[in-house]
Image (tube, helix red, strand yellow):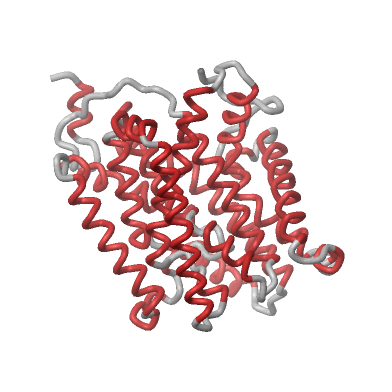
Length: 392
């Protein structure tokens, strides 16, 4: 038996008992498109949350529709991880250090940046020691700023990857049953969050910081990766049907929100991301984005501007995600709320959105040209301006 086979038999801390057969690797441009579209929607979520008037039902309905992002992100994360492993299996003792380095360092650095920003916005009289303990607490819970839970859950998925791979293998031939069970479990969990919050009071409001709040989408992404060729072929063959599913799900989701509003529910909680209807909508819009991605991938020019743009945007997306709340904070809370006084609502939301996208891109591009690239963007130093990997 070769040394390589022996290594893979030990992979996943004894979970993987035989080396998987590597599959032919091909870059999935469809996934890049889904990633870019979802990141743009994330910026929309946070911009609307910061700028919408409390009485603006239309913006809150849009916010509710955009709250699919975390579900699609974690499905995408699991898909990429499992797909990558199936093409190029690696030992977990090699996988974990690299992954935790690329996500863990930016997580700590940006947690510190946002911790300081929050203290500047709301000065504290606490001692240095108290502030340090508070920072450690926020680091553990992903609460230094409102978007950093995503990195914390991502690292939980990394840690659980051997178990995810084991489950995907053990349930082959029964994946529909596995997905159905996972859907029911998450449906019960988010129903408790939304309708009976007192039953999960022990989570202290940190529901979004734990992987089990998204377990169905993590499992769905992993199963889809195990059937990547067939799954993507099905999406390509059923794009019109997926379009109708997205439309129908959007109408149903808006209907649920409107009924809740008519019953007197406050707008902000009624569009919470962790609720049953978002599971249906998150699944539908994820397929919709993938359908868009397959259409673009099928028509793309390998040497065209579109391909270069998608390559660049996908590469920069993580840095933009990390930086964009800082731009929102600078625009809205620095300078005595000048924008809020100068730009009327709802135009404030559109203006801030465009400025945030531009500002986050500028920060990311600047960071990529410095030795701080890894710490600020999760990518190693990129060298020259607009440098990206070449993919055909």
